[in-house]
Length: 91
Image 1: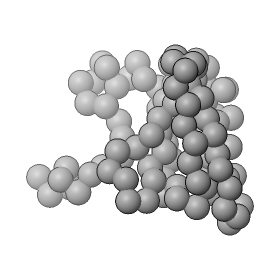
Image 2: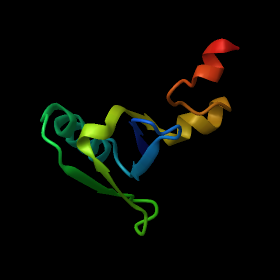
Image 3: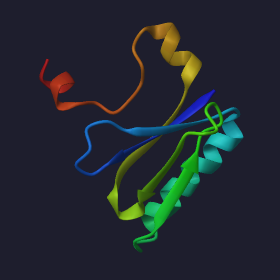
C-alpha cells in the first residue's frame, strides 16, 4: 500500500490517501503537483483505496507540500515517514 500525504497551510496534521499500486500512487501524486502548479484556485478531491468511504477535498492554493511513500516500510522501521515538525527539529 502506498500513501500520499498532503500538508496544508495552517494545518498541523497532513491529510492522506492510500493507493494499492505504485503506479496509482504516482498518478495521484502527479495530480496533486499539477494542481499546485496551476496557480488557479480550484478544489482537488481525492478518495482512499483502503477506506473507500474516506474522501478529502482541498483547495489547491492551500497545499504547501506533498509526499508519497510505501506504507510497509514505515511499520518495519518503527518510525513513520512524514513531514518534519518543528518539535522534531528542536530535539
